[in-house]
Image 1 (spheres, rainbow, N blue to C red):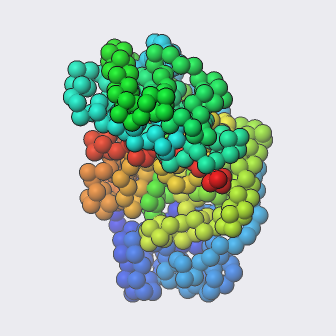
Image 2 (cartoon, rainbow, N blue to C red; image 1 turned 90 degrees about the vertical axis):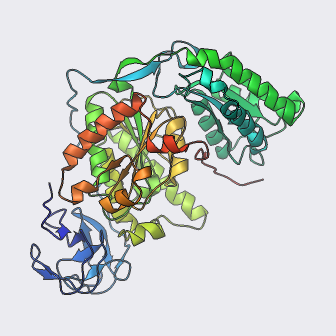
Length: 512
């Protein structure tokens, strides 16, 4: 646990930098480091504690975060003006740090919803929605109109066990290769949501002539129509007004069944949490991310599942995950996704090294290496048991990886399609985000953000940097909050109505 007296945070004895806990002005003496600050250093930014020559590696977390682009003096601010990316070898050491997981003898429970029938029989839900999915952008307006009618008509007041009716629409579904990678991703995503246990029932609405035909979607993903999975199209229904009326009638038929549920005690092993970070800063890898990792370790010991994602934001730190892989095969699956991304970005005339956003940089993160090393902390310390492609059903228990982009809505959409019934989202710059049908908990990395944006944040991990608490204690608090949320306690984003607009399937491929 940090003390409140120090002006900086040292993460490892061999690091070349420390992290400012508050704004430092030139001439400030860092007694712990025997260094005098040269110039202004913002909170969460790095200060050199020793002389670093041009071209030399710079370490944080006892890992290389970049190379000095010019000579750096002790006490100098280390950031974009003097730190740059560079190539170096990494030791993947597959499975070197894997160790048996110590599962608890008596797993805790939460109040979940056990699905008794339909495609999700036997699965456990944390929320109870009816969903409307569009096959194509052309049916998005109709899908929203059906959901809006259910919300505005007041009919939901008669069904208190239903959390809502949500329309999840997107901007693709046509103008794409019907057999291409992009179509496979879209169909896998839609199927994952159609099967999600947090949906008591689902309508799939199409236009009728799109590339992503309803019949092809159902066939490719082995989905069967029934009372809780209905499909129809605008062209077959006779236009917009008739389609909306038809959809409203179908929702009203589903509502009594959806309402016929009751929460009951179920094991925490039924929790599948997607791990996200967005608007990261220099504190992310010190406070919120490791605290989330501590909560993940607790969940895994109770038999639950955690999904780490955002491949461009673990780039350069993948060796820390391969060391925890339960087998070389699992580790190689992760490296294969890294190589896919290198080829993908090269094909698009981009590269993987320029990932931190302007907000990340303003918050103290300089290179993708630094950002990634902090991001992997969300995954805790247990074994990496499997690696999945985007939106694939996650069937393993424990800590797993899913390949997704770093863009939060796209990444979380893939995790929920894979079965995540909870999202935990860390942020240092501030985030306004939700993820229907799964609740989303947000953690602030610093207390200043908590004070400024408390209406959007569920837990303040900034108290770790303030010296008020420890990573372990915050991880336990978060785990308890995860149980309460999965039991029905609403998150801040749910109270604000976030969740429908954040459904963003990953679009890969040419627009035809």
